[in-house]
Length: 431
Image (cartoon, rainbow, N blue to C red):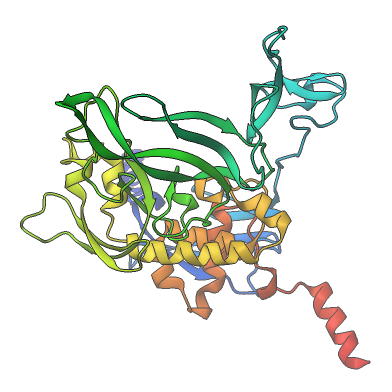
Protein backbone atom coordinates (compact mmCIF):
# COMPACT_ATOMS: atom_id res chain seq x y z
CA UNK A 1 0.00 0.00 0.00
CA UNK A 2 1.58 3.27 -1.09
CA UNK A 3 1.84 6.46 0.90
CA UNK A 4 -0.99 8.24 -0.95
CA UNK A 5 -3.47 5.46 -0.15
CA UNK A 6 -2.53 5.53 3.53
CA UNK A 7 -2.91 9.29 3.59
CA UNK A 8 -6.33 9.02 1.96
CA UNK A 9 -7.51 6.46 4.55
CA UNK A 10 -6.30 8.65 7.42
CA UNK A 11 -8.13 11.66 6.03
CA UNK A 12 -11.35 9.65 5.72
CA UNK A 13 -11.08 8.46 9.35
CA UNK A 14 -10.41 12.00 10.61
CA UNK A 15 -13.37 13.30 8.59
CA UNK A 16 -15.65 10.64 10.11
CA UNK A 17 -14.51 11.56 13.62
CA UNK A 18 -15.08 15.25 13.03
CA UNK A 19 -18.44 14.62 11.42
CA UNK A 20 -19.65 12.44 14.30
CA UNK A 21 -21.98 14.28 16.69
CA UNK A 22 -20.38 15.09 20.03
CA UNK A 23 -21.88 14.07 23.33
CA UNK A 24 -23.23 17.61 23.76
CA UNK A 25 -25.28 17.23 20.55
CA UNK A 26 -26.96 14.01 21.61
CA UNK A 27 -30.12 13.68 23.66
CA UNK A 28 -29.52 12.30 27.13
CA UNK A 29 -31.15 9.41 28.95
CA UNK A 30 -30.67 8.78 32.67
CA UNK A 31 -31.00 5.27 34.08
CA UNK A 32 -30.24 3.84 37.54
CA UNK A 33 -26.71 2.49 37.88
CA UNK A 34 -26.51 -1.21 38.54
CA UNK A 35 -24.78 -2.34 41.71
CA UNK A 36 -22.52 -4.80 39.90
CA UNK A 37 -20.98 -2.33 37.48
CA UNK A 38 -17.24 -2.79 36.91
CA UNK A 39 -15.87 0.75 37.27
CA UNK A 40 -15.32 1.13 41.05
CA UNK A 41 -17.22 2.06 44.21
CA UNK A 42 -16.55 5.80 43.88
CA UNK A 43 -18.17 6.04 40.44
CA UNK A 44 -21.46 7.99 40.55
CA UNK A 45 -22.17 7.80 36.84
CA UNK A 46 -20.79 6.36 33.67
CA UNK A 47 -21.79 7.28 30.15
CA UNK A 48 -22.36 5.07 27.13
CA UNK A 49 -23.20 6.17 23.61
CA UNK A 50 -26.02 4.47 21.74
CA UNK A 51 -24.89 5.08 18.17
CA UNK A 52 -28.03 3.60 16.64
CA UNK A 53 -30.42 5.94 18.48
CA UNK A 54 -27.83 8.73 18.84
CA UNK A 55 -28.36 8.96 22.61
CA UNK A 56 -25.94 9.49 25.46
CA UNK A 57 -27.06 7.10 28.20
CA UNK A 58 -26.03 8.02 31.75
CA UNK A 59 -26.14 5.32 34.42
CA UNK A 60 -26.25 7.24 37.70
CA UNK A 61 -26.47 7.01 41.48
CA UNK A 62 -26.28 9.63 44.24
CA UNK A 63 -23.24 9.86 46.51
CA UNK A 64 -23.17 9.35 50.26
CA UNK A 65 -23.75 12.13 52.78
CA UNK A 66 -21.06 14.79 52.67
CA UNK A 67 -20.17 14.05 49.04
CA UNK A 68 -21.32 15.08 45.59
CA UNK A 69 -20.79 13.77 42.07
CA UNK A 70 -17.98 15.56 40.30
CA UNK A 71 -18.47 15.87 36.54
CA UNK A 72 -16.17 14.12 34.14
CA UNK A 73 -13.01 15.98 33.21
CA UNK A 74 -13.68 15.80 29.46
CA UNK A 75 -15.83 14.00 26.91
CA UNK A 76 -13.08 11.41 26.56
CA UNK A 77 -13.53 10.36 30.19
CA UNK A 78 -17.12 9.13 30.54
CA UNK A 79 -17.23 8.85 34.33
CA UNK A 80 -18.28 10.89 37.33
CA UNK A 81 -16.62 10.48 40.75
CA UNK A 82 -17.90 10.99 44.29
CA UNK A 83 -15.93 13.76 46.00
CA UNK A 84 -16.15 15.38 49.43
CA UNK A 85 -18.01 18.67 49.66
CA UNK A 86 -15.24 21.22 49.92
CA UNK A 87 -16.95 24.24 51.50
CA UNK A 88 -19.15 24.96 54.49
CA UNK A 89 -21.07 28.04 55.55
CA UNK A 90 -19.56 28.67 58.98
CA UNK A 91 -21.41 30.43 61.79
CA UNK A 92 -19.54 33.42 63.14
CA UNK A 93 -20.25 36.18 65.62
CA UNK A 94 -23.09 38.54 64.79
CA UNK A 95 -24.22 41.82 66.33
CA UNK A 96 -23.69 41.94 70.09
CA UNK A 97 -21.93 38.56 70.19
CA UNK A 98 -18.43 37.87 71.51
CA UNK A 99 -15.41 38.39 69.26
CA UNK A 100 -11.68 38.84 69.62
CA UNK A 101 -10.79 40.37 66.23
CA UNK A 102 -12.55 42.24 63.42
CA UNK A 103 -12.21 39.14 61.24
CA UNK A 104 -14.79 37.34 63.38
CA UNK A 105 -17.56 39.87 62.61
CA UNK A 106 -19.75 40.37 59.49
CA UNK A 107 -18.57 42.67 56.72
CA UNK A 108 -20.45 45.71 57.98
CA UNK A 109 -19.34 45.33 61.62
CA UNK A 110 -16.18 45.61 63.71
CA UNK A 111 -15.04 44.05 66.97
CA UNK A 112 -15.11 46.59 69.79
CA UNK A 113 -14.78 45.84 73.51
CA UNK A 114 -15.08 42.12 72.80
CA UNK A 115 -18.38 42.36 70.83
CA UNK A 116 -19.42 42.90 67.21
CA UNK A 117 -20.87 46.34 66.63
CA UNK A 118 -21.66 48.79 63.83
CA UNK A 119 -18.73 49.78 61.69
CA UNK A 120 -19.83 53.43 61.91
CA UNK A 121 -20.51 54.95 65.31
CA UNK A 122 -23.93 56.38 66.10
CA UNK A 123 -24.22 60.19 66.29
CA UNK A 124 -22.74 61.76 69.42
CA UNK A 125 -25.11 62.22 72.32
CA UNK A 126 -26.34 65.66 73.27
CA UNK A 127 -27.86 67.05 76.45
CA UNK A 128 -31.36 66.24 75.23
CA UNK A 129 -30.81 63.26 72.94
CA UNK A 130 -28.71 60.11 72.88
CA UNK A 131 -28.54 57.20 70.46
CA UNK A 132 -28.20 53.45 70.74
CA UNK A 133 -27.48 50.62 68.29
CA UNK A 134 -30.45 48.40 67.48
CA UNK A 135 -30.57 45.34 65.22
CA UNK A 136 -33.67 45.77 63.06
CA UNK A 137 -33.22 42.80 60.71
CA UNK A 138 -30.78 40.03 59.80
CA UNK A 139 -27.40 41.73 59.39
CA UNK A 140 -28.95 45.22 59.72
CA UNK A 141 -27.95 47.41 62.67
CA UNK A 142 -29.15 51.01 62.84
CA UNK A 143 -28.98 53.93 65.27
CA UNK A 144 -32.11 54.87 67.18
CA UNK A 145 -32.77 57.50 69.85
CA UNK A 146 -32.42 55.92 73.27
CA UNK A 147 -36.02 56.81 74.06
CA UNK A 148 -37.45 55.23 70.89
CA UNK A 149 -40.59 53.20 71.44
CA UNK A 150 -39.95 49.50 71.77
CA UNK A 151 -42.88 47.34 70.72
CA UNK A 152 -43.43 43.63 71.22
CA UNK A 153 -40.21 42.33 69.67
CA UNK A 154 -41.76 38.92 69.07
CA UNK A 155 -44.40 40.42 66.77
CA UNK A 156 -43.58 43.82 65.32
CA UNK A 157 -40.52 44.94 63.42
CA UNK A 158 -42.02 48.34 62.57
CA UNK A 159 -45.00 50.21 63.93
CA UNK A 160 -46.64 53.60 63.31
CA UNK A 161 -49.23 55.50 65.33
CA UNK A 162 -51.87 57.85 64.02
CA UNK A 163 -54.08 60.51 65.60
CA UNK A 164 -56.37 63.38 64.62
CA UNK A 165 -55.09 66.93 64.81
CA UNK A 166 -56.94 69.69 66.64
CA UNK A 167 -58.43 72.64 64.77
CA UNK A 168 -60.35 72.91 61.55
CA UNK A 169 -60.13 70.69 59.61
CA UNK A 170 -59.19 67.79 61.80
CA UNK A 171 -56.84 65.61 59.75
CA UNK A 172 -55.25 62.30 60.53
CA UNK A 173 -51.48 62.36 61.00
CA UNK A 174 -49.10 59.44 61.34
CA UNK A 175 -46.02 59.30 63.59
CA UNK A 176 -43.27 56.76 63.19
CA UNK A 177 -42.30 54.22 62.19
CA UNK A 178 -40.93 52.87 65.44
CA UNK A 179 -38.81 49.76 65.36
CA UNK A 180 -38.84 46.44 67.15
CA UNK A 181 -35.79 44.42 68.08
CA UNK A 182 -34.71 41.59 65.78
CA UNK A 183 -35.75 38.28 67.43
CA UNK A 184 -33.28 36.13 65.44
CA UNK A 185 -33.46 33.72 62.54
CA UNK A 186 -35.49 32.45 60.80
CA UNK A 187 -37.67 35.55 61.38
CA UNK A 188 -37.66 38.45 58.94
CA UNK A 189 -39.68 41.64 58.50
CA UNK A 190 -42.28 40.39 56.04
CA UNK A 191 -46.01 40.82 56.79
CA UNK A 192 -47.45 44.31 56.20
CA UNK A 193 -50.50 45.61 58.06
CA UNK A 194 -52.61 48.50 56.74
CA UNK A 195 -55.19 50.52 58.68
CA UNK A 196 -58.11 52.44 57.23
CA UNK A 197 -59.26 55.72 58.81
CA UNK A 198 -61.74 58.46 57.91
CA UNK A 199 -59.93 61.65 56.92
CA UNK A 200 -60.50 64.98 55.17
CA UNK A 201 -58.40 66.72 52.53
CA UNK A 202 -57.48 70.27 53.68
CA UNK A 203 -56.91 71.32 50.04
CA UNK A 204 -60.49 70.58 48.96
CA UNK A 205 -62.35 73.25 50.94
CA UNK A 206 -65.67 74.06 49.32
CA UNK A 207 -68.11 76.36 51.06
CA UNK A 208 -67.96 75.25 54.66
CA UNK A 209 -66.92 71.63 54.18
CA UNK A 210 -63.91 69.58 53.16
CA UNK A 211 -63.86 66.51 50.99
CA UNK A 212 -63.79 63.40 53.17
CA UNK A 213 -62.36 60.05 52.17
CA UNK A 214 -61.16 56.73 53.55
CA UNK A 215 -57.41 56.75 54.01
CA UNK A 216 -55.08 53.77 54.28
CA UNK A 217 -51.70 53.89 55.92
CA UNK A 218 -49.09 51.29 56.74
CA UNK A 219 -49.67 50.68 60.40
CA UNK A 220 -46.90 48.18 60.90
CA UNK A 221 -44.84 45.21 59.79
CA UNK A 222 -44.59 41.90 61.61
CA UNK A 223 -41.78 39.43 62.07
CA UNK A 224 -42.50 36.25 60.18
CA UNK A 225 -40.81 33.40 58.40
CA UNK A 226 -41.46 31.80 55.02
CA UNK A 227 -45.01 30.56 54.43
CA UNK A 228 -46.44 32.26 57.51
CA UNK A 229 -48.70 34.75 55.69
CA UNK A 230 -52.23 33.69 54.73
CA UNK A 231 -54.27 34.59 51.67
CA UNK A 232 -55.28 38.24 51.98
CA UNK A 233 -52.14 39.25 53.89
CA UNK A 234 -49.89 41.91 52.38
CA UNK A 235 -46.22 40.97 52.25
CA UNK A 236 -42.85 42.34 51.17
CA UNK A 237 -42.12 39.11 49.24
CA UNK A 238 -44.24 36.18 48.01
CA UNK A 239 -41.97 33.65 49.78
CA UNK A 240 -43.72 34.67 53.03
CA UNK A 241 -47.05 33.42 51.57
CA UNK A 242 -48.27 29.91 52.36
CA UNK A 243 -49.18 29.63 48.67
CA UNK A 244 -45.82 31.02 47.53
CA UNK A 245 -47.75 33.34 45.20
CA UNK A 246 -48.90 36.97 45.34
CA UNK A 247 -50.45 39.65 43.14
CA UNK A 248 -50.39 43.43 43.36
CA UNK A 249 -53.28 45.18 45.12
CA UNK A 250 -53.94 48.47 46.86
CA UNK A 251 -54.58 48.39 50.64
CA UNK A 252 -58.34 48.26 50.09
CA UNK A 253 -57.91 44.97 48.20
CA UNK A 254 -58.69 46.47 44.78
CA UNK A 255 -56.54 47.16 41.72
CA UNK A 256 -57.87 50.74 41.38
CA UNK A 257 -55.93 53.37 43.32
CA UNK A 258 -58.31 54.58 46.08
CA UNK A 259 -56.52 57.96 46.11
CA UNK A 260 -57.84 58.87 42.66
CA UNK A 261 -59.76 62.14 42.93
CA UNK A 262 -57.98 63.12 46.16
CA UNK A 263 -55.45 65.96 46.15
CA UNK A 264 -52.06 64.33 45.57
CA UNK A 265 -50.33 66.78 47.91
CA UNK A 266 -51.91 65.13 50.91
CA UNK A 267 -52.67 61.57 50.00
CA UNK A 268 -50.97 58.86 47.94
CA UNK A 269 -51.34 55.10 47.96
CA UNK A 270 -48.82 52.32 47.45
CA UNK A 271 -49.68 49.15 45.57
CA UNK A 272 -48.34 46.07 47.37
CA UNK A 273 -47.99 42.30 47.05
CA UNK A 274 -50.94 40.38 48.56
CA UNK A 275 -50.94 36.62 49.14
CA UNK A 276 -53.41 34.65 47.04
CA UNK A 277 -53.77 31.03 45.94
CA UNK A 278 -54.01 30.60 42.14
CA UNK A 279 -56.64 28.08 41.01
CA UNK A 280 -56.81 28.61 37.23
CA UNK A 281 -54.94 30.50 34.50
CA UNK A 282 -56.36 31.53 31.13
CA UNK A 283 -54.21 32.52 28.15
CA UNK A 284 -56.78 32.02 25.39
CA UNK A 285 -59.45 34.65 26.02
CA UNK A 286 -59.47 36.93 22.92
CA UNK A 287 -60.10 40.00 25.12
CA UNK A 288 -56.82 39.48 26.97
CA UNK A 289 -53.43 40.88 26.11
CA UNK A 290 -51.92 38.95 29.02
CA UNK A 291 -53.27 36.12 31.18
CA UNK A 292 -56.33 36.01 33.42
CA UNK A 293 -55.75 34.41 36.82
CA UNK A 294 -58.47 32.93 39.00
CA UNK A 295 -57.41 33.01 42.64
CA UNK A 296 -58.66 32.54 46.18
CA UNK A 297 -58.26 35.56 48.43
CA UNK A 298 -58.60 36.19 52.13
CA UNK A 299 -62.38 35.60 52.03
CA UNK A 300 -61.87 32.08 50.68
CA UNK A 301 -63.84 32.87 47.50
CA UNK A 302 -62.59 32.77 43.93
CA UNK A 303 -61.95 36.02 42.05
CA UNK A 304 -60.62 37.01 38.61
CA UNK A 305 -57.47 39.06 38.02
CA UNK A 306 -56.69 40.62 34.65
CA UNK A 307 -52.90 40.88 34.82
CA UNK A 308 -52.65 43.52 32.09
CA UNK A 309 -54.73 46.01 34.12
CA UNK A 310 -52.03 46.18 36.81
CA UNK A 311 -48.76 45.07 35.25
CA UNK A 312 -49.38 46.68 31.86
CA UNK A 313 -48.72 45.27 28.38
CA UNK A 314 -45.70 43.14 27.75
CA UNK A 315 -42.74 45.22 26.54
CA UNK A 316 -40.77 44.39 23.42
CA UNK A 317 -38.85 42.15 23.09
CA UNK A 318 -41.01 39.58 24.97
CA UNK A 319 -38.09 38.21 26.99
CA UNK A 320 -37.70 41.62 28.68
CA UNK A 321 -40.61 40.94 31.06
CA UNK A 322 -39.37 38.46 33.69
CA UNK A 323 -42.03 39.57 36.19
CA UNK A 324 -44.84 38.87 33.74
CA UNK A 325 -43.21 35.56 32.84
CA UNK A 326 -43.30 34.55 36.50
CA UNK A 327 -46.94 35.56 36.95
CA UNK A 328 -48.34 34.34 33.62
CA UNK A 329 -46.63 30.97 33.99
CA UNK A 330 -48.58 27.88 32.93
CA UNK A 331 -47.19 26.07 35.98
CA UNK A 332 -48.18 28.60 38.69
CA UNK A 333 -50.94 26.39 40.10
CA UNK A 334 -48.87 23.24 40.51
CA UNK A 335 -45.90 25.33 41.73
CA UNK A 336 -48.16 26.88 44.37
CA UNK A 337 -49.23 23.39 45.48
CA UNK A 338 -45.61 22.24 45.71
CA UNK A 339 -44.66 25.37 47.66
CA UNK A 340 -47.47 24.71 50.14
CA UNK A 341 -46.10 21.17 50.61
CA UNK A 342 -42.66 22.69 51.10
CA UNK A 343 -44.03 25.01 53.81
CA UNK A 344 -45.80 22.10 55.58
CA UNK A 345 -42.48 20.23 55.70
CA UNK A 346 -40.70 23.38 56.84
CA UNK A 347 -43.14 23.79 59.74
CA UNK A 348 -42.49 20.18 60.78
CA UNK A 349 -38.70 20.56 60.59
CA UNK A 350 -36.37 20.97 63.56
CA UNK A 351 -35.39 24.45 64.69
CA UNK A 352 -31.88 23.84 63.37
CA UNK A 353 -33.23 22.85 59.94
CA UNK A 354 -35.48 25.91 59.89
CA UNK A 355 -32.52 28.17 60.51
CA UNK A 356 -30.42 26.41 57.87
CA UNK A 357 -33.14 26.08 55.24
CA UNK A 358 -35.41 29.13 55.42
CA UNK A 359 -33.48 30.96 52.68
CA UNK A 360 -33.98 28.19 50.11
CA UNK A 361 -36.85 30.09 48.38
CA UNK A 362 -34.31 32.85 47.70
CA UNK A 363 -32.06 30.31 45.99
CA UNK A 364 -29.66 30.22 48.96
CA UNK A 365 -29.25 26.58 50.01
CA UNK A 366 -26.35 27.11 52.42
CA UNK A 367 -25.93 24.22 54.84
CA UNK A 368 -29.48 22.91 54.47
CA UNK A 369 -29.52 19.10 54.52
CA UNK A 370 -33.23 18.49 55.05
CA UNK A 371 -33.96 15.90 52.36
CA UNK A 372 -37.69 16.65 52.06
CA UNK A 373 -37.20 20.40 51.76
CA UNK A 374 -34.45 20.10 49.17
CA UNK A 375 -36.48 17.63 47.11
CA UNK A 376 -39.64 19.75 47.16
CA UNK A 377 -37.78 22.92 46.21
CA UNK A 378 -36.07 21.04 43.38
CA UNK A 379 -39.53 20.00 42.17
CA UNK A 380 -40.74 23.60 42.56
CA UNK A 381 -38.08 24.71 40.08
CA UNK A 382 -38.42 21.63 37.83
CA UNK A 383 -42.14 20.97 37.47
CA UNK A 384 -41.74 18.68 34.45
CA UNK A 385 -39.45 16.40 36.45
CA UNK A 386 -41.92 16.50 39.34
CA UNK A 387 -44.65 15.22 37.03
CA UNK A 388 -42.36 12.55 35.55
CA UNK A 389 -40.45 11.22 38.58
CA UNK A 390 -43.15 11.41 41.24
CA UNK A 391 -44.11 7.90 42.43
CA UNK A 392 -41.73 6.20 39.95
CA UNK A 393 -39.88 3.97 42.39
CA UNK A 394 -37.67 2.38 39.73
CA UNK A 395 -36.22 5.77 38.83
CA UNK A 396 -35.73 7.12 42.36
CA UNK A 397 -31.96 6.68 42.13
CA UNK A 398 -31.92 8.90 39.03
CA UNK A 399 -34.02 11.54 40.78
CA UNK A 400 -31.76 11.58 43.84
CA UNK A 401 -28.71 11.87 41.61
CA UNK A 402 -30.21 14.86 39.79
CA UNK A 403 -31.17 16.65 43.00
CA UNK A 404 -27.72 16.08 44.48
CA UNK A 405 -26.13 17.54 41.35
CA UNK A 406 -28.13 20.73 42.01
CA UNK A 407 -27.90 20.71 45.83
CA UNK A 408 -24.69 18.97 46.86
CA UNK A 409 -25.79 18.44 50.47
CA UNK A 410 -28.80 16.41 49.43
CA UNK A 411 -28.62 12.70 50.13
CA UNK A 412 -31.21 9.93 50.40
CA UNK A 413 -29.67 7.61 52.95
CA UNK A 414 -32.88 5.74 53.61
CA UNK A 415 -32.84 4.15 50.16
CA UNK A 416 -29.15 3.27 50.13
CA UNK A 417 -28.20 1.49 53.30
CA UNK A 418 -24.45 1.05 53.48
CA UNK A 419 -22.79 -2.21 54.42
CA UNK A 420 -22.14 -1.17 58.02
CA UNK A 421 -25.88 -0.71 58.67
CA UNK A 422 -26.68 -3.93 56.82
CA UNK A 423 -24.10 -5.85 58.86
CA UNK A 424 -25.54 -4.39 62.06
CA UNK A 425 -29.08 -5.46 61.11
CA UNK A 426 -27.87 -8.99 60.28
CA UNK A 427 -26.31 -9.28 63.72
CA UNK A 428 -29.58 -8.21 65.34
CA UNK A 429 -31.50 -10.80 63.32
CA UNK A 430 -29.05 -13.59 64.25
CA UNK A 431 -29.27 -12.65 67.92
